[in-house]
Image: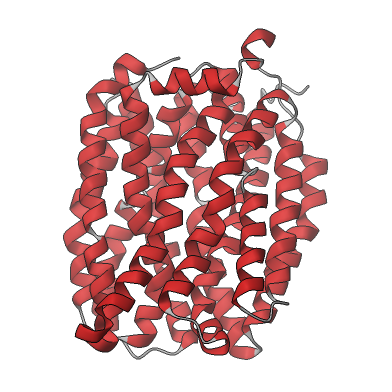
Length: 415
């Protein structure tokens, strides 16, 4: 097995993983910009759209991440990632062939099944390749797949849907992932594993036991879940808000939100990784304190943007909180890697993602969609705006949980 002892070899693996993660979020969030034409063609409610945007994907994604991570900890993580990419890309392409809500829901379930095997093994692989002093920055670079994938998905999906139709958008992004899979499989090799063979055979239940005994894990997991609930909710519904309340066309909304994700998200993630590695030199509390402060500062700025009626002003107001709410990724993901011995990192990451995604991804878009339907008699076309505003309370909860977690990290940390 390769050691990846040179900077160039580590950078190549990180670049390949970043591309896969970009496909992950491209396939996941292209649905957001396509929601309006799908709603129109299939005559869906906002609640049904919320199910397609969150619950359909998260249901199996969150649960299956555990067994896939367990397999990855015991076999070759690069193989698990390659197979996952093929599955989720194939189901994304199939979304373009559906003829109703039921078929589309099942295909989104399939996307979730595939993506369940992609993220946690990647976290563990990166943590094995990079030394601890560079780990947060490496995870930050990997996490750039979120704004890159989401932004490109929104921009590309909007352009294709406007020029052709929403079905073609699904087909193109799905087939692109299928084509890239063999390139990744032939390029990335499993690194030399750390830890003992006995540690790699520890049962999943025992890994859960290790994590369950650490308060920092629960506080980080539920803090991240609260942030993801509103984060994924806003990500799914903001294009629809721009079309309903700001009068934008689908193409204009895709330009607005795609640029917001790229311009705000990329600096936010990189800043989170840099500050986390700097904070790690003097103590462990910064890995949770930095995200906590960022969440709390973001709330009033997001609220002002949601309540504004000018697209230009809304973009300016959303830009800073968009960056702040991405800052949690590198610090928190790095901290989770250090709550267990190295051979158990994929399973620990999957346990964290189970909580984060089942609550955040599963309920975020659905909750805002349900609020929009419930508030429609009172607020009419502005019901979605009010539902998104109410969801911001989750960022307050997330910020407080992160601040409580900060002093507990030093005790629970494993080098």
